[in-house]
Image (cartoon, rainbow, N blue to C red; front, side, top):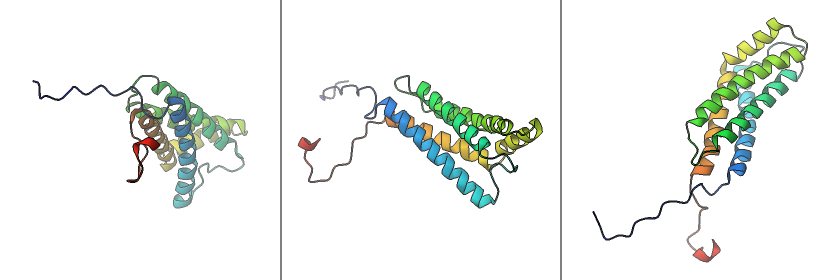
Length: 166
């Protein structure tokens, strides 16, 4: 059926943001959302993320570090196809949350805790709002990183800007 209009050309592959840039932005966003979210959850719940005393900063360092590595690697793999699938964000979020729990467990062991304490800390994080915060931060950040590479949005223009400025 010919309506007299010329066929529209297919859109160019990829979005306006290159994949390495989107990966960097999303990873930084994940770290920021994770730290801010855990801080707010700790404040609202009036509980520490790691309730056991004497462990120092090692559980937090190990869990955040491992979760960030898994998030970045997962998003880098998810951004390889063209176009990347938004469903990848769910798998990245799940893997990142599990890495956070595993990192807390290893961090407790590194700090000198026994297996029971490490398991207790990791289990508490996995079954509390703290685990939900990490999962949500990873899901939002991964989805945003994928969206940066898929959308074809341009910067907003004021009515007085002309086409020569672009």
